[in-house]
Image 1 (cartoon, helix red, strand yellow):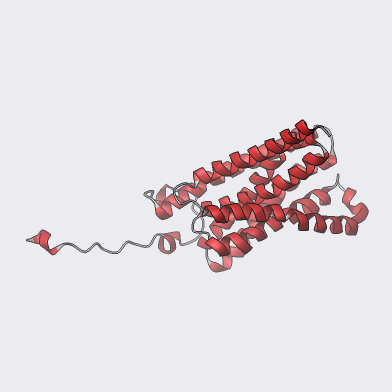
Image 2 (cartoon, helix red, strand yellow; image 1 turned 135 degrees about the horizontal axis):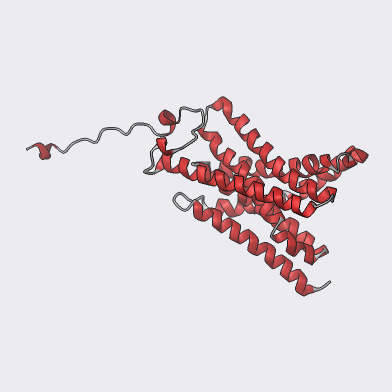
Length: 262
């Protein structure tokens, strides 16, 4: 094994994780998530690699030859994407939200991205030990893919506390479904190895990144509307919830100083 290539692969993976995490946290600088909770979320995301491998091996054994149908469609969307995205979601809902709460939409995004980056970092570290050159390529493709797919889901996790109670689970499930579509589409192109599979996988990643960027803009608008100076009327596509009354209650009247009237 070429140790220089191994260190380069690990270094590139770590650099990608730091750039993405710091970039997302900078967008949340007005009301940042607690640093300790964010880092712990990243660590727990890495730990989900172990149950992910166990579950995926079990599913592959159970599905057998069915995995080959449709260019390994089930392998990409169910075995890989659904399992991994569900475990990351479990970290955010089971730890991050319980430990610090989701106080605005960007909180859901930051915690979800942190969990995904922990998973992607450990996954790439294992890959680097087996094939350092592939790990270097994955640092600029697979690691961002994890952040994009789970970050999209994080937007919906961040929205869920601010909709009606009966709508929270459907909202989170919608985010999970989108994450599985992005993650599964990326993996499917790679697993199938059909014509132009490289372009297809990068195309899925690019489309997911555009969607994620759009949701980041919307998340910041919503957070500003809730806590900042922007008016709710500036939001182009408000969700069907009574956000005006539940999130931005009318401020109580400011008592006047009786001395001013003298």
